[in-house]
Length: 253
Length: 312
Image (cartoon, helix red, strand yellow):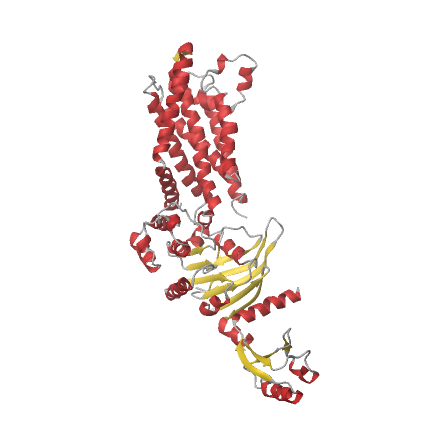
């Protein structure tokens, strides 16, 4: 393994994030606060509890996941798209790095950034509500798994995209709607049939509920199911990336 | 250790667009030499280099670095190769020294600030080490590209059009640097369409056109073999056509009829010049000036390309 090479990419990416550290931190803090003001205070006052959980606390895992998805995809896709766009990818391709090593560098850095943002949201949430995490270790592991999965997905987007506007398309047009409709801010049990059953086809439901389970020990779907679904998505992304490097799709001519 | 550090065997590349960029190229690069790959734009020079460096996937053939397949032993191969691409592509928001250190570590080498300092000093970049890359001039950026390629101490260096768009002073500097690298044992392969560059620096020259290696020759041999001299005669009175009495010398007449050009082999026993001049005097053709000119690599090159076009 070329650990130094992986570390070089990781450091480079983290350095890039560090240049925009303050906006990088201010954005999640402000958006979380806004969500709490709107959902927590304005709407939450009428809902008070879902499944015996205070509404304010209930939306914390959903908020963290929403940011984790978008941050992961954005950071990972931008990270690999930028060298493709500027042409500096030549150096990565000509370096003694295997596909796994290249992906580890980029995805590792993007996942680190995305998890930091999720944790900043977690801390900010404490300013508004009391959140108690029932399975802290599982919660962290789940955070790592989801961040890694969406960063892999973002890496694919970054390779696939032909321009910067396409980098935005997937998060805005697919992930955000699926997250909002996937029970980030409500329990899907609150939906009438057939909408509840239809919602079960939304993969994000499993991601959010798996994470919510680590907080409260209860969720709309069983933790095992959620974990299996997340893991399946993780493997699917790995498969696509394996294919990308094998064929050189949009990386090599 | 064999004499060839790099062997290219039947290397082919057809792009998805259907363009045959390389048509089965065979080439051996000798250890420690400076090899110039000469050819017009679109000849396949960059494709050839890109395949060796792992940036482009070949359609067929293989590359051996010290006898080892460059894909099967990609780590070893790539650690030994440094590439200075044609385009000035770099992370423009990075400080100069970080981008060079990055390159070293990316290639798996231990961070070595002293070695980085040496490289930067050698390329007169040390004073600018903290500058953000986008603030550097084009010439400086070109040096940065070289510093990045040298950062992991490769023993095979590819320079793709190193002096394209570079001023005379920097070009001299670069040539000196390439010579110093060679003195330290680095094998250098450079592509260029400036003949001057190949003539000045190379030990051997390869001419590539339309994806085919037309010729590979020691530069001095090439110059000797193909080095023809040209005699230009400025005529006192323009001629409408070449008189039949001069046909055996096969001279060429310029369009306006004022210059007669005669090509001859400078190394031959008989150059044919005295007899031509005598024949001209007999024909009553007077000239006001004459000069002879040794054909440069450029003339040879143009001749070769022209020849291969005619054959096609």
